[in-house]
Amino acid sequence: MAVSSFDAAAKLPGQNVRGVSLWQSAGRRLIRNRAAMGGLIVLTVVALLAAFGPLLSPHKYDDVFWDVPFSAPPDFANHFYFGTDANGRDLFVRTLYGARISLMVGILASMVSLIIGVVYGATAGFLGGHADNVMMRIVDIMYSLPFMFFVILLTVFFGRNIFLIFVAIGAVEWLDMARIVRGQTMSLKHREFIEAAHAFGVSGPAIIRRHIIPNILGPVMVFVTLTVPKVILLESFLSFLGLGVQEPMTSWGVLIADGARSMESAPHMLLFPATFLAVTLFSLNFLGDGLRDALDPKDR
Amino acid sequence: MLSFVAKRLLGAIPTLLAIMTIAFFMIRLAPGGPFSSERAVPPEIEANLNRVYHLDEPLVIQYWHYLTSVLVGDFGPSFSYKDYNVTELIWTGFPVSMQLGLTAVLLAVIIGSILGTIAALSQNRAADYGVMAAAMTGITIPNFVMAPLMTLVLGVYLHVLPAGGWGDGVQFQYKILPIVALALPQIAYVARLTRGSMIEVLRSNYIRTARAKGLSERLTITRHAARAALLPVVSYLGPASAAVITGSVVIEQIFSIPGIGRYFIQGALNRDYTLVMGVVIFYGVLIIAFNLIVDVLYGVLDPKLSHR
Image (cartoon, rainbow over all chains, first blue to last red; front, side, top):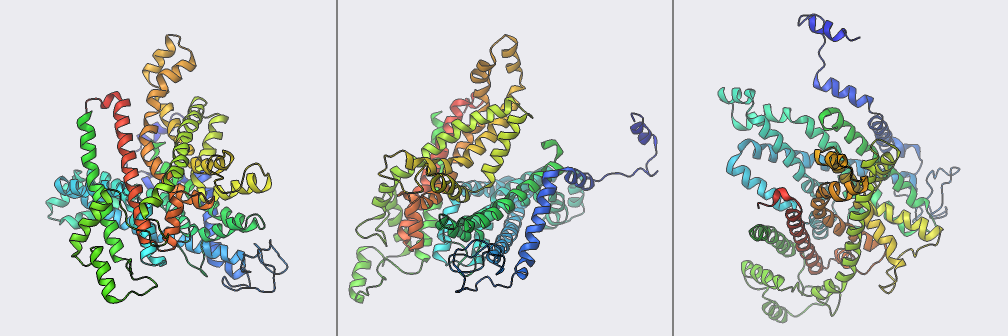
């Protein structure tokens, strides 16, 4: 087989030599990564369950069933697949509603952080000089603020609005993104195609939009996959403390807090949501690590 | 060295100002004031009270008053705890929180670096995979899930440890679960960091020299490799202390430990604005101070940075 590379090199360009693009080879590496693919499959299952799972049960998430025992373990005869919670509601449906909230927060808040981080970082990196110094100094200052506490303050002062939580979490998580994007932009800035765009008289914002952002998508994508679990964790953290999602709506953090309160008599109330949260976080981390290895092989 | 410390101290000023400014304006935006509580006061008296507490002056002046009083450690009265002001509450909770936090950080550094070194020395063998899988678990599973699970197994099923509370503050068995729950994620991070840097250091020339001159493996690791391999751990201590402080809020709530974090959550749930603000500023200052100490320590330990 040692000759095959020689053969390939001997062929002239355009003679059936199929090149492998960056994305194709990254895709192949990702598919070979068992942990990442396992994570992807589990995530798909969790997402499908979150979307359609509640239809499998005849109960609604906020129905209180007075005639069944409260905090009871799973009871398949009456379709309480995960049992009931302390208020006699169906824990299966509630856990899946929690999945909806967590995945939604994860995606939306990551998008908020993505947009702020990419625009801020690309602008700072592209402008360079004084503007860059000032912008990054601001990021440095914000880094050393105890942000978790400011998010809690926000929820205390402005009520526990779920959209506020999205925005607040997104606004916390954009700092790393801005740094990564700035670094990438700085290294792209002096490449020939950017200079060509300058020479053609393309405006600054247009260069950022058309030439810089498409070229930094790889690392950005990796970072977004690693931001999603962080954001889900933050939301559950807030909800666990009673500062996030409010009753009768629920989220994994709320369910885990309820479960922790009654774990001596009803451990299932803790175990079901905790397992869902842990499995989702694991899968997201495996997928993110796999993506990073696939897109950036030198980092392995 | 002195100029480096001075520079870092100056650099901390804008951060501190940012924290206090955000704190002040948030408290002003918050609905309700200190005297608009359940018992209505005649308007004349409310005006008098407002005058005494400078609430009728322009916002800029009030901002100045707030800054100066915070700088001398006066965070105002608590809204929900009678007869206490925020400073007193913080100082009653601080010893407990500090004990919890410092022990957790210490545990994280010691156990984490030992585990990381073991993993690095047996790279790509069973011990390595075991440590790294455990570290992945520790990082992924949040402490508010880990803590109840540990309590369920050790406290409720096996009855080895008390399931909550702080005892009288001296009893050791009450402290084990909270400290371990708080330290676990940090142990995991430190183990990962140490493994990575240790693997790199073990490949370097001076380690080969140490081995070539016949130094025992243990001395090579402890005398030569550890010094360089633990530098990233030192720089992680800043973020670690911030993470431990955030984590202690949850842990104190779960185990009902009378520390600052618990006051913070109670304050947040009761809308005790001054208490919440006070704790945020206090923690902010603490985190800045930790980062400063870590940077100075790093400068001392890393010979490459000695010119600063």
